[in-house]
Image (cartoon, rainbow, N blue to C red):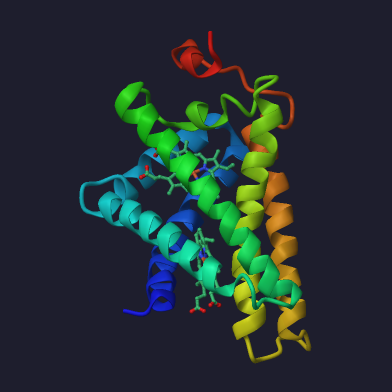
Length: 205
Ligand code: HEM
Ligand code: HEM
């Protein structure tokens, strides 16, 4: 199968998961308890023995195929959205390797429940937040940036008089707003989250 097609198919699989995943993070603006409750329900969908191997395989395929596409396209890109596609893809490769590696290490080696607190321990603790703020922000922004770049290049129709490029910029704007909202939720309205002792190992305590 063509690499681009493979990348497209695994991309759709990952996008469905990321949609649910970011919705889960968005929910944290209504409280941590609610985030945990929603994650418990969503885990029934993505953390069962049927779906999770497919998701993890899709992540692997996405990174390998994406890096191949990066290699072939690197010398030929010229427009803003082509460049955006390339560099957001590269960041997503970096992020997904660390992020999924961390989640699996947390679950199987550290024997932790990789829940809300696992995800936000570093984000809410100085000096780890100096890494985690750009790390998570760029991940959400890159996801939206990658989608916006595809949209700008593939969309042929105008919507409400907006050209494909204007629509793509609108997707980028939505990504920025969602990032801010999610950060608000994950940091308890920017006041900080107290991390339970069970997660001390993540913070070197
Ligand atoms: C969340 C993960 C990702 C999703 C949902 C995703 C999705 C997509 C989709 C749907 C396309 C359009 C394919 C087509 O034109 O039919 C694409 C293109 C591309 N992606 Fe990704 N991708 C992801 C991660 C990555 C990664 C990790 C890289 C690695 C650098 C990457 C690099 C690229 C490149 C270079 C293209 C342009 C291909 C071309 O136009 O020839 N992507 N991506
Ligand atoms: C603020 C941003 C994010 C935070 C705090 C976060 C946190 C987490 C947590 C806590 C888990 C474990 C879930 C569980 O045990 O049920 C997880 C899993 C995962 N996340 Fe994220 N995530 C973020 C953004 C993203 C983004 C942008 C992507 C993709 C582009 C992503 C991809 C994944 C994947 C593939 C898994 C593995 C699912 C599994 O099999 O358990 N995450 N994330």
